[in-house]
Length: 221
Image: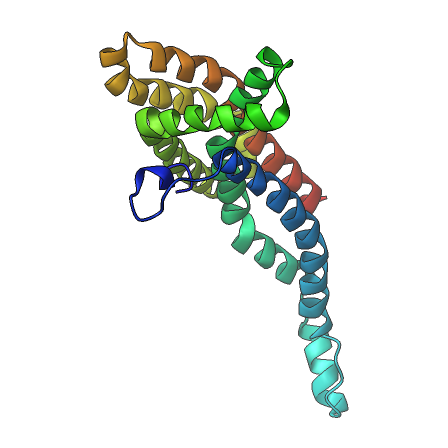
C-alpha cells in the first residue's frame, strides 16, 4: 500500500526514501514480534496448565480435576491449533518482503559509493515499478504460502519425513509463470528477474517444512 500511495492524488508526494523505509520497517517489527511472542507464548502455556492445579476450596473436586488432567494433551492441542498459522503467516510475510530486500541489497552493493539517503530515495522507484509490474506475483506467492501451510498441517509427520509435499519448486514455477503475463510485453525481463530472485527466496518453503517437522519430532520426544 505504501508503494502504491504515490500514485493516489489524495495522498500526495511522499518524501524520498519513504517507500524504502516502509519496506524495512516490517523487518524490525517482525523481530520485535518474535521476541515478544516467545514471552507471551510461555506465559499463555503456563496459564493454561495452571488451571488444572488451582485450588477451588473443594478437596474432592480438586482431586478429581487433577486425576482427570491431561497436560500433554492440552499442550498438543494448543500446538495443533496454532501450527497452520505459525507456518502461513511468517512464510507469507517472507515471500513478500524478501524479494525486494534482496534487490535492495544488490542495489546497495552496486551503488556502494552513493550516500545511504540518496540510495534509499533512488530505490523507491524500483519498488513502485515492481509493485506495478509484478505485484500480482507477490499475491500468488502469498496464496501459495497459505495453501502450503494448510497442506503441511494436514500431512502426518511420517509423510512429511518420507514423502514431503512439493513446495519450493511448485511455488517457483507458479511465480515464474505468473510473471510471464507482463514479461511478454517487456522482452521477458520481469520473468528473468522473478526467476533469479525466486531461486533465492522460494527455498523458504522447504525450510518451513523442515522446521515444522523438527518441532513435531521435539514435541513427540
